[in-house]
Length: 237
Image 1 (cartoon, rainbow, N blue to C red):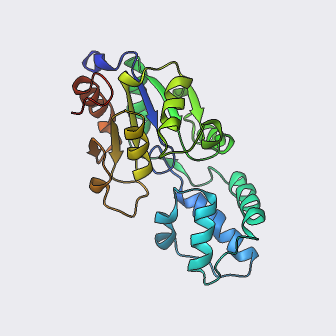
Image 2: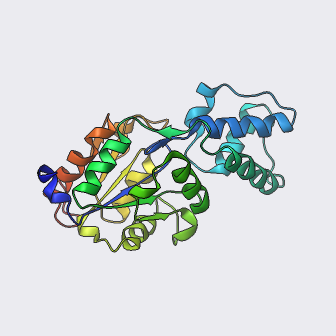
């Protein structure tokens, strides 16, 4: 990986859902299980896919509204707890890394980069998912929203993930799929790469990333380009 020499010692932080792993099938399945328990009709996958990525509460609220039964605040806590239990039980039944993820992570590790997961998903769910899809060995740390001072788009989440692997924000990149990832990186003074195949309802090109890519195989070169042109935070491209 001599062509990726600029990544030696760099930190690459990754979002999880919609970036590393296509988790929508199991999240939608868990949602439809809860809807069925509440005698509500299931929702079609295509309708729910873009509801994913904002956390369990948002998914349940939007799912129940789409099923014609808006979720009251008094019921949300117990339903969220039940949803998490159902989801954990099937967390990697249908979820899988996106094409190119394993090859790209392998190249990044071989180039000497430190890899960390920076996700708004709870850490124990994130670890269970990574274990289930075989990605755990690639990462030096996993920092869910519960291990950060605040969740993305707060820059302290990205900063906490970088710090968790002993990284330097001046030599770090955030890779994600949503406005929370781009804004979280920007708020931490770190450049960002967004993938175009994730879970965003807005055009990915409008979300404020430094680069947008369409294949995960492009992640190493995108990170190297950003680190070469952004040697320190907030210097721009």
